[in-house]
Amino acid sequence: MQLRFGTAERADRFYDDQVLDHLNPRMREFAARQEMFFLATADRHGECDSTFRAGPPGFVQVFDARTVAYPEYRGNGVLASLGNIEENPRVGILMIDFFRDRIGLHLNGRARVLSDAEMRAARPGLPVDPVPGRRAVVWVEVSVEEAYIHCAKHIPHLAKVPPQPRGADRERDWGTDDVRRKGGDFFGAAAGAGDRAPRRAPARGRHGAAAVEGVDPDQWRREAERVLARARQRASGAGGEPFSGWFG
Image (cartoon, rainbow, N blue to C red; front, side, top):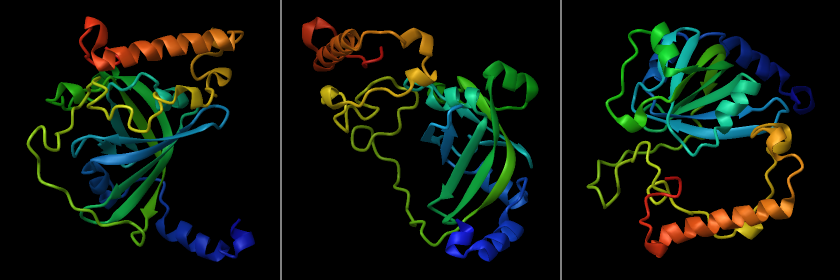
């Protein structure tokens, strides 16, 4: 593509000037104070997933010039990123500072999943987060192979709002399973269950191919509709069952 669009010389200059195989001191300082990043993974077949990770400043642990790690909090149980990493350890991380520096940092490398106990045995000084919902279920440790800038010219400059009283603009509910606090059915996916695309993952092993191969699609749909009806009933408080989150 560089040859096709005539950008090979520009690309070579970028590689020579900006792409490192480690984190230099300014990159390490930048990564260590970020509150969020975007994560790209793919399974063994190349099926891709992109997602978002966030935490307080310092949730990304920068151990040295070639090693970073981040905690995985309790989520929706899909474990798409972790499942992909188990099949294909290559990851891409994009950190963007929208608020102060208005610049980005790409980290590409190989990842591995470690239990909290394993990580703490290897890193005895690892802090314990005081918020239970932000305590790691597991850690993802990344060995950096490439690190380079994401230029500022198209990054919007955002401003943080001051903390709001609960009930106005709620503080973040770390680790909650309350579907309302997580955003509810914001995009109407549950309400439009009949429009849902079939899952692509089972045939490729993300949820275990042996568990789903040969299942009658009509039987699967009936079961999905039953679960969805129960979830809607719980969400409305019907049937005398108090609502405590669809996953409770």
